[in-house]
Image 1 (tube, protein in one colour):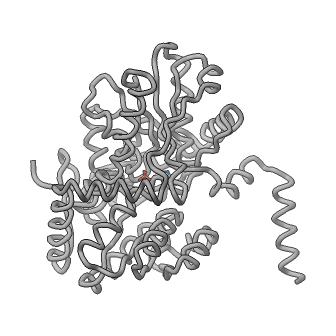
Image 2 (cartoon, rainbow, N blue to C red):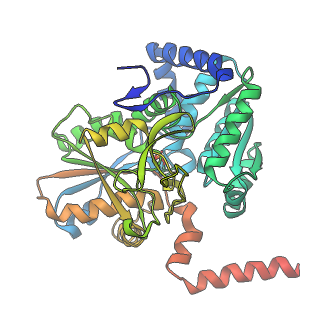
Image 3 (tube, helix red, strand yellow):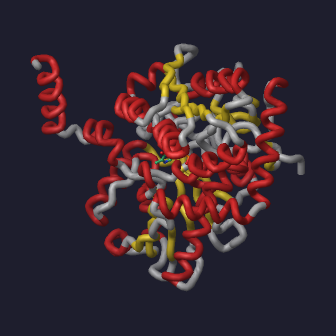
Length: 409
Ligand SMILES: *Cc1c(COP(=O)(O)O)cnc(C)c1O
């Protein structure tokens, strides 16, 4: 198999001027991968800075209420900055330090990857520039505020639809002009080789821990593992712990939005509007129209509405090793409410997609079976969206009251 390809997917479609930079990055990544002390340094950093290993929590109440499989939750929400994104950015931070570069750039959509990258840059003492669509800058002010306070420069991108894909293009433009000093911290297991493989490698710490923990707690492998799929990094992270176990079914859950038949979703693996394409430096299934124009996506969760998908997952899906499902916005909100009330745990809207599918399937399984849900992040960040969706009147009053205060003082 050609390097950087997973079946027919992947590759590195990059401009000539970046060839040298990618050669350097590939060399640094491969050297790090071959060096056991690098992984140990990474594990130590994540232990001391991000609270790893994250727990595997047996959700006893939720399991009893559903009356089927025993449900375990892998708690990536307990990472520093509240999600699995820390695993990737801190790993790349160590690599940047090894390469002797002093500046990092990143794209961000909802702002979660931007905040994680700005956090990493502050910790390592790197200069940091974050590209973000102008539309997203307006919608995600709290994250923009934190990025700036953490010392990053946030550049609103005014091109195109002024969202994530435009931010990615602008970040690549910056990189072409700054590659001697700068590393591009890509946020998920997508993009040109080596990013999909490298990001999946850093995230594999989730699966390594989960495999050890479920054996310790249960004495056996789980029957199924669920993860939500945006770009695919948290899913690849946990799936890698179980890929060699053919008895463990792997389930990837995409954003079903308002329903697959409405066009308002982000399902690349189940929708007939997804087709092979080359964009943003790699080949995968993109949601596109018959002219190859990228479609607008929709999800209640900001982190799952991406037009492409990890080439590694596109391949695993095609081979039947990963089963893909989609959860709708309404199913996601119901799963979130049930998890909060039964377990006292608030999953991110993204993670709630994995919960929604698991909650659908657990009752059809036996008490002797077990499943793991990868909880990619915590839901605190989603308070604006969740309170709005639940139409909470006192929340509305609170926001209006705050606005009044600003107007009058
Ligand atoms: C960004 C994000 C995702 C989606 O990204 P993947 O690369 O698919 O993991 C999922 N959950 C949370 C909490 C996120 O912040």
